[in-house]
Image 1: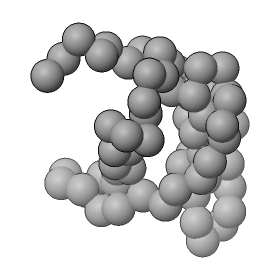
Image 2 (image 1 turned 180 degrees about the vertical axis):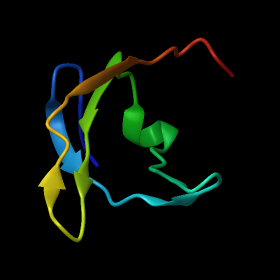
Image 3 (image 1 turned 90 degrees about the horizontal axis):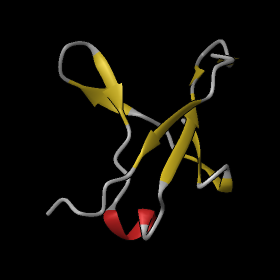
Amino acid sequence: MRYGFDGWKLVAEQPSSPAPFDMHGVFLAPETIGETRTIGFTMRYPPTDRWEGIDYTIGVDHGCA
């Protein structure tokens, strides 16, 4: 997964890990997210190295404990 914070700032990539229900996921630690308001991301599918071609954006609620 390629992701960036608050409008694709600080772009990074992180591989996914197998998750339940035949899915994959990426864990972003709270200290990595910091005071970020939004996370933008897109996905690449190995071994074909094909990009999904869609950018997703999710909001971050820092009020949750």
